[in-house]
Amino acid sequence: MEVYGPDLGMPHTRSMGGSLFELRLKGPEGAARVFYCVLSGRQVMVLHHFAKKSAKTPLNELFVARERMRKLLP
Image 1 (spheres, rainbow, N blue to C red):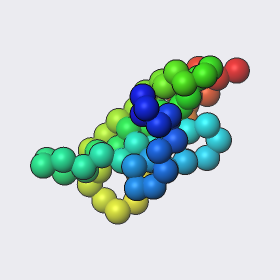
Image 2 (image 1 turned 60 degrees about the horizontal axis):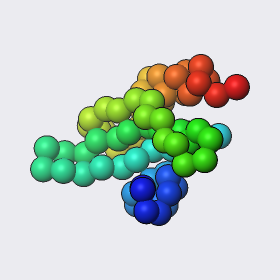
Image 3 (image 1 turned 30 degrees about the vertical axis):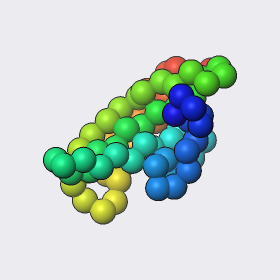
């Protein structure tokens, strides 16, 4: 992200609508997701993360990230 910016594109990042993005991580323990938004310039604010256990993103995880973003952005 430091080199290429916050929107790396699929399969690394995905737009979740508005200014919210999802960082898609895979490791030996399984998949993880990190929701983030971009503030002024290239400043990235991590809003929420969770371990991925199903094919779809759980709505409650998305809700937490959107609420945190709403409090940050004007």
